[in-house]
Structure formats: structure tokens, C-alpha cells
Image (cartoon, rainbow, N blue to C red):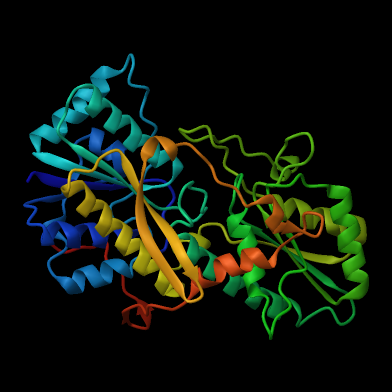
Length: 412
């Protein structure tokens, strides 16, 4: 057997390193000689910036700490490979690196754009009869990969969002005896509202949940929004609203673009979205005189490993392990998927699908799960999401703070 290489790509999650731990465990169990990591994904690979993971992961205690470490241990990137036609030299270079390091198994952990990398490389290998195997490991807090019930990373992000919403609602209720306070919470989600929908999970016997939830799957009507805010403020002393960063008005503009615009665009053509909640709270104060507050969860929702879901960590580990094992068995050009057989009791199976059915395809929240004229989510969504946030995995603490495994601070 040849060696293994794994890369992490795109936005990190609270459990992405659990998938790395699964790959390492499967590789060691199968007798793989060398396990390499790409330093900053495919971008680092092209620079031949490889990490020998034996220098960092010595035993089970290191693996256990790795699973409790947020962000991408190997470093991430947002790098789009060019089309094969007309760029054969790029692919010849990459396969030359694979051959140089005797790498037979290439694993990439990421979301929609990362699966495009697996598609390109497996296609080139098939075209030129190359022996290397390429497998995709699902990862994204956005939960928008197709053909899988959900993606590792989403459950922990949803748990953080629901917990934080519950705490924000409790805090906001402390004020407003004389005048209502309106709080608008901005949650990640460019085109798919899975993360913002998770705000509804805060609703429980001791919490009413957010008053309104806006997803990018529905056109955002500012006038209707303001009317609803005024009505709620007339009835309640505390109003809390969850909005996706990607909500758009009828003419296609992002709401965040109505305020101060950010023109930054990444390698995949994605605009950086921020400022939606700030714009809306300024509008609320201007039109109503009410006190309003904007909160952006931003990167907090994807790096809170101290609040990770045990279900999520276990599944992230399993998809990494199964992806490596499948590659060793000769599978290539595929991604591991999760199939929920039962939600109560919760039972999940793992499957594999052709990467061509997955790469660059975005799965959105079903329309019938968006209720109340586009301002809330249904019980069906809650039944779908509740099992994904169950359980905890405690961090290892030092000096009262969680301990992490880091390339930067590792002592060789």
C-alpha cells in the first residue's frame, strides 16, 4: 500500500479535526506507512508544503485531544482548481507530487467547493489511467451538501446557535420595562438557511425562542419586516429576531449591501457577507426610536468545540474513518454520506455517492419547512435537527481553559 494524504478546506468547523482523527486511526490500523497532511489544503499541496503527521500524533491521547480542537488543525484554504482542459500542466504537477511521496490515497475534507477538487482529480486520474484513489469527506456548518441527510459540523454549529439564542433571549428580557428592546442576531448562511433555522431549537419549556426567523430561501420584504417589528414591540418588552446573513430583497441585492458594502470576493466568486443585522437595527431605531442591538455570531458558530455535539463529533470521526477505509478498498471519486434510518431512537448509516452528483450542488431548506409567511420554521425542521445536537464531549482543561492541539505551538 502507498501513503495517505489528507487536506482540510473551506470554512472550519468545531468537529473537522475529528474527521482527521478518523483518517489517522483508519490509516494506522491498515498499516499505512506515512500519513501526510496538506498544510493549508490544496493550495499548500501545490507548493509541496506537506506535514508528516507522525511528528504530531504519537498516541491515542493526541488523537483524543485532536478531536477536541477547533478550527482546521492542518490549516485551510479557499482555492479553486482550474478546468482540466488547457491546464494539464497543473494536474501533471500535482500527480508528480503524489508520485514523489508515494501517495496512493488522497482524502479531502470540505464542502461543496472542496468536493469539486475531488471531482477534478479523480476525473484526471481516470483520463490518464492513474492508480491514485480520491475520496471526499463531508464537512460544512452550512449543511448544504446534497445526497446526505446532514453534514458533520452542522450539529455543533446548530447547538451553539440554539444555546446562544437562548442566552440572548434571557438577557434581552432583563430590560425593556419602560421601552422594548429589539435584538437582531445575524447568523451565517449565504443561500441556504439551515444555520439560521437552528435558532428555533432554542424554543423550549423555559424559553419562547426567537420572535421571527428569516432564511435566504425566501425574499426579504423590508416593509413587512418593519410592520412585524412594530407590532411585536407594541405587545412585548423584548423582541429577538434571527436573520441569515444572506437574505435578499426582491431586486436580488443582499440586505447587507443596502448598508456599507464589502466588495471582497473569494476564489469561488463568493462575496463576503456581513452587516445585515447592523443595517436592520439602524433602520429599526431610525423608524421607531426603539433601542436596538445587532449581534453577529460570525466565526463563533463554527469554532465552539467546547459546546460541540457528541453526535456530531462521533459522526465526523466516522466519515473520516470510512472514507480512508473505502479508499484502501479501491473506491475513488466518491463522498461519504449519512443516512438517518430512524430519528427516534436516532440511528444513522453511512453510504457513498459519486462525487459528480455532489460537487457544486447546493441543498436548501425545504420550502414547506418555512412557515408563517416566511418568518419561521416548522416542527418538521425541529424533528429533523434535534437529534443532531444531542450529547457533549468535555474539553481537556489547563489553567481553567480548554487545551488544543496546534501545529504552531507543537514542540517537536
